[in-house]
Amino acid sequence: MDSISTLTAALEALNGERERVKLLEADLKAAQALLEEQSATLEAAKSAAAQIENVNELRVNEVLASVGVAPVDVQPEANDRVKSREDLWAEYHSLDLPSRNAFFKKHKSQLSTL
Image 1: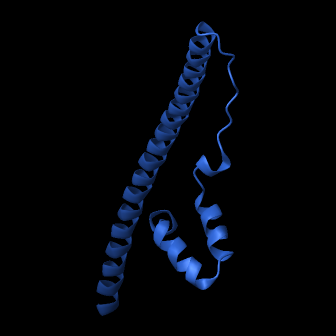
Image 2: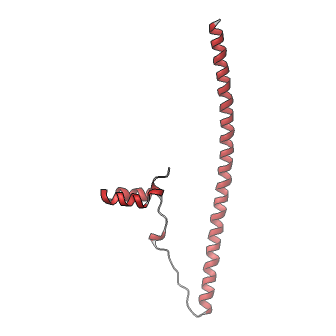
Image 3: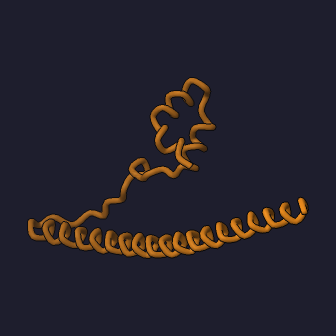
């Protein structure tokens, strides 16, 4: 009798876990759908930003031409770009210990994210 109640309890626990897995799978599907939606939104935003940048460049060139100045192709400096987390860690590891401490304090928010 005791083994039957033990097996029944184990079966109930297993069924509970099975339900929990089904709920987690549903949550995972919803999260994947949200990720796809957000990725599409991000790509659309990047595209819109690139179009705005092109329009702004055209307007600047028009204004310069209207005052008789030839447009100049301006390239952003390498220092203006946002460094990736990997770039920051590579730079961090190339420094000596005192410099590492100062560097980490300066870039703590980027370096400490997952």
